[in-house]
Length: 407
Image (cartoon, rainbow, N blue to C red; front, side):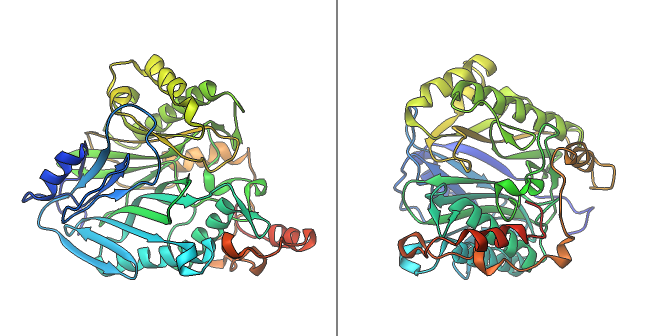
């Protein structure tokens, strides 16, 4: 699709299960959906359930993503996908116990299948990913499972020639208490504009204290959603300033800091296009580590954004582990508004300026993508159920110390 070709409309609705079933049976079914709150559905197009308990009042909800009918359906490896020729929604789940492979191995496999899906369908650009990792803060083989996931995810990006650093897609990674490793993703035929938060070091430039390989995601993606509208897809956002977690143990302060970070992402989006977004108008999914904190989390959101705001009324609150053990809450969000993104990610763009403003806080030892080394063998670990002995301190130090990638 050329730059002058009209973009088919993209939209999302937060539906009840009953409304989903009606839509799935209609002439304009959704591309796919994320279900919150334990949905049992036998529709021809079933939503992908997030294995996390809903903590607030109200029944199950489904974020239904729509393109334009008719839809094509298929599989690439273990990925199930549907697309309308421009927009694609895909899903994959892999169980470590059933597969007999480590989280790192399954992560690389999942992302290989995802990138194969993009090539096969022509929907080449990842816009947004949702990663759900069982036991994300657990340890095996001497390394936290989230860090194992980051090693494998980054390697898969590099092997596929995808942007693992600046320009990476929006994403989240949450810890589930049960179920398989899952990835859901949204892709399209046009690249989004990757956004960074000037209050934070880009995740792909985190210092080595956070793991041998850095997380491969941007803080948000600004997408031309067709019909003169933009979609803002905001990654999982938490109480991090610079690269450090803030307000340890204080969930209310963490929520306020998270909302400040969300506002900073909106400001970055305003610098990259003509669309204008408002914090109280976001559709939010709120992940809370400790179930008992949910009422306090919601109270802060209502106090800051307004009890009758769309963000407060439509928010879904789920029990999940956050990627850092010291973080108690994470919020992801999306919104649509009239206006279009700027066309290029040229030098001097807001993304580049945001990176430049924050790099001094965490000097990077990044090697250009084309020269990235393979993952050190010492960092490849076995599944939790078949954990290898912990690496000797000297060997683990070599695995971390010899990295030539940003962390």
